[in-house]
Image (cartoon, rainbow, N blue to C red):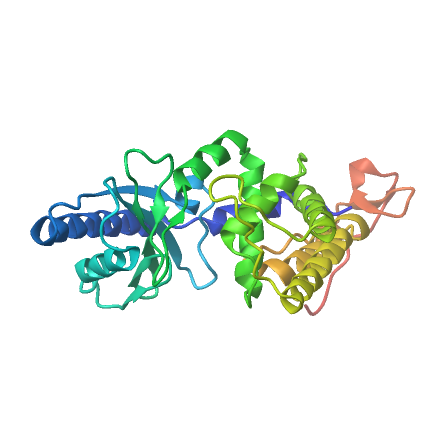
Amino acid sequence: MANCHNLFSDFNDDLKITKTKNNNLMTSKDNIRETIKKWFKENHPEYKPEFYIQGSKKLGTLIRTKEDTCDLDDGAYFKREIGVSGTTLQNWIYEAVKDITNAKVVHKAKCIRVIYASDYHIDIPIYYFPEDEDHPQLAVKNSDLEESDPKDFVDWFRYMKTDQLVRVIKFLKAWGDHLRNKMPSGLAFTVLAEKNHVNDDRDDISLYETLKAIRSHLKNDFKCVMPTVPYDDLFSEYDQVRKDNFFDRLDAFIDDAKKAIKDEDNQYKASKYWKKHLGKRFPEGKDEHLENLLTAAALLKKGNAGTDKEGRIRTKDETKIHNKPHRFYGE
């Protein structure tokens, strides 16, 4: 059995955004907030935005993509009675930030996205939160408001999470980022992982067992239901083709993970199975067979080699049969 736990530890470190990028991300977030506050004060002073970071940044599951980009969700909340439509509120936020960068600003269905080219983007979902309501109402472009409560989700996750669960979620998100083409969202992977996480001292085994548990769960009932408001099914729009495509990818990952853990005793070869699904950033393991050969060759060259009773090259003091020095020619 090849143990790749240390490789997953290195991979987890590599998925983290750099300190510089994080500082830039937070500076941009602060700049956007101040710009929005100023715009509303000048144009609609009766609307006073408050902000709350949500999503993977708040959960601790943020990863940098294979293009070295990342994102931040920063909700804008209006704690007042519902006035103008959600779409109008989105349009106002768009007007406030449309010139804040040289890159484009996008009016998406459920947020305004501010793009910082080739570096990161910041999504601004917008909410009404009247005093007499238990949960915020999310603005949706050209549609009705939707009840949604990201803070409740953050509180739920903080209660349920473990350090290993956070890492497994990041590995699943890296898998999705590597393959893309309508893979589940980071939110869906978070919900699936929490529901199906299998704890283990080793991250490679934990990921493998969690993948199997996810497959069993979805084969029984292909749903990914939010544990907090609005309690919706994140897979409700999956048609049969998309379901089949995901199962094909999931089965392939499980099969190769099994080979890496149970069938392969060489860490280098095992790491190739993991890289196939997690991308080129996943580190290559040690080729222990090659290292043993090189060690033996070095001992022979120095004249400090011997052969033990099982035929393995060891140092002279570990063996009874001593080998003569050997010179190697070529590479």
